[in-house]
Image 1 (tube, rainbow, N blue to C red):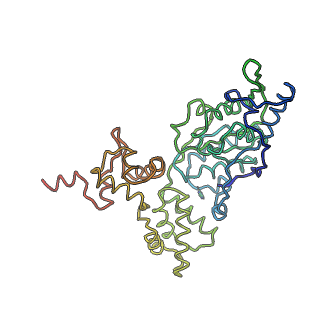
Image 2 (tube, rainbow, N blue to C red):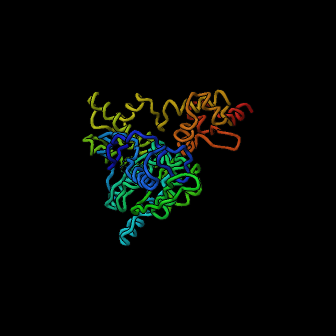
Length: 384
Ligand code: ADE
């Protein structure tokens, strides 16, 4: 993920972080020989000069090349595009910033891309960061004060913000204002600092984990859904063109069917298939070439990889298909519970291979059959 328009980190002056703090912080004060008013002014200035600690992930150049730049290049998510088109037109005609937007859904469906597109459509900058990179008040303050009028601040994994950061965001989102407390105890004072109107775009895979005060401050809350095979085929054909790769319609469809409803996976598989077809001199990429390549990379006809199949097989072989709890599944497979919940399960549920029940996860009959097992109900009827 690229950081757009975020400045390079400059070294911060050597001093404890707690010489500046906000209402919710209770730390030991840093002693200074300056007069009280000088100290207060210096505290506020230091806070406002602080640069954001943003997690800089250099964008994969190929990925950047194929990322759609404008809303009309973006394939799929029809409802979301309609909602955003209206929001953009309304904000532009009123010469206002866009409403704060919360995007949620499984990873790889285009939340970051959509945020960059919104910035392009609104002709503003987009600063991209992720909640775990915002560790201290100065990080979020640095980001907020660096925004120009109308800019977009994109915070990925927004459900992971600290309480303190959230509290700084509330007046910032609501009134474009920073409330900074200087001093401590009875002598403390709150200073309000105006911010330029901006748009916060939050992204999360776990909308239920957001606190309600934060969730309530978003004017638009939108879900991204898995893509259909025909949408993914179009995305693959578009990407292949940009990568100068020759692919047939049925080749694109074969890749699309194995892409788990996710453009990020579609583009990744396209690159693997392209390598295969180049090395084996099998061009253009048709359904047969795509199928062979993806078998080699262990991606089955429905897009399940080794981990998906291992999850299903473990539940079937060890727990008779479930119900099994998330932690039990994690311990039995050696996978991380959060990754199972956020990455693997949503697609297995989407294709009807797994269900969540109050007593735990259950593999459906279709899931049993896909792995070559007879489901228990069929075993029963065979015995009768
Ligand atoms: N590349 C990744 N996601 C895309 C989308 N939704 N439309 C077009 N190209 C994409």
